[in-house]
Image 1: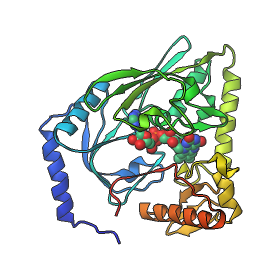
Image 2 (image 1 turned 90 degrees about the vertical axis):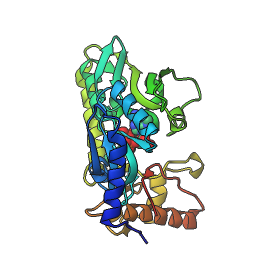
Image 3 (image 1 turned 60 degrees about the horizontal axis):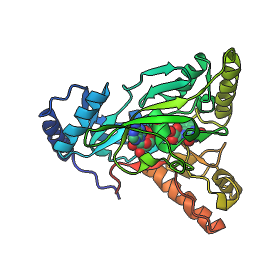
Length: 319
Ligand SMILES: Cc1cc2nc3c(=O)[nH]c(=O)nc-3n(C[C@H](O)[C@H](O)[C@H](O)COP(=O)(O)OP(=O)(O)OC[C@H]3O[C@@H](n4cnc5c(N)ncnc54)[C@H](O)[C@@H]3O)c2cc1C
């Protein structure tokens, strides 16, 4: 059972966060009591107490240090394409990086700030006739989120093209990370532990003079394939479960084989086009999605003995 606080408790909580943060006179815009469903591709999620929108690394530093001094927990958000925010929302501050989105190139190196949409960055690379990012065109999410998740698709992966990552620690220190062998793995990056906020990434690409039309053709092909798989037909967060080599087949195939396409919890449904995608068919709650994820895990475990590990992240306050 969800235990919802009453309206006055919520007002008090938000007012407390607001009072504590306003002491620091942040330079960047901040909104209070902001619905997170507007920031997630699943279109679910209750209110965050506060959301800050830093426009520069300096504003990000100021925000992170203020939250720490005010003892307010702060969570970083990119495109919200891999998260399920709870219906009760997020206590504390969401640091939304969508305003950090400058992109520049020098020779074969393309630098993009963390909040830029990774698909836009792939498009800009193609327009500059720099090849290597085509695989990720049309994938939702930010540069920071793609590095954090070591995003992969269509035979490509972020790690092999990563030249360097700029970051900020929660102590306000900036730094630069250079990839080392073994730091990245399937859906794993060194940023998943520790306190580093990715502020920009540099990709090493291949100059491809005269190749712009061919690159765009490949990218349109990937976009079309996603469309056919229903990626854009309903709110979702892409693949729900990680693949695991030990299963001998993709998680989506296992889910298909035991007939779970179309399985529903409230308005959340296992896509009828792809077993590893859960869609919000209208008014799904975060609780519907979580309960469906658990139901699929149970049914797969009973039928096959495999434990499917979610790739999507559950954030916020859960009962
Ligand atoms: C239709 C659809 C298709 C998809 N297809 C694919 C696919 O083919 N391959 C694939 O890998 N994924 C896919 N995804 C999932 C998603 O696009 C990726 O995981 C993406 O990389 C998430 O990026 P984001 O910016 O949205 O991250 P968010 O969801 O905002 O955040 C994810 C995590 O990263 C952390 N984070 C985000 N930015 C930063 C930062 N700057 N510094 C530190 N931490 C940060 C957040 O705190 C959170 O823990 C798909 C999603 C959708 C909706």
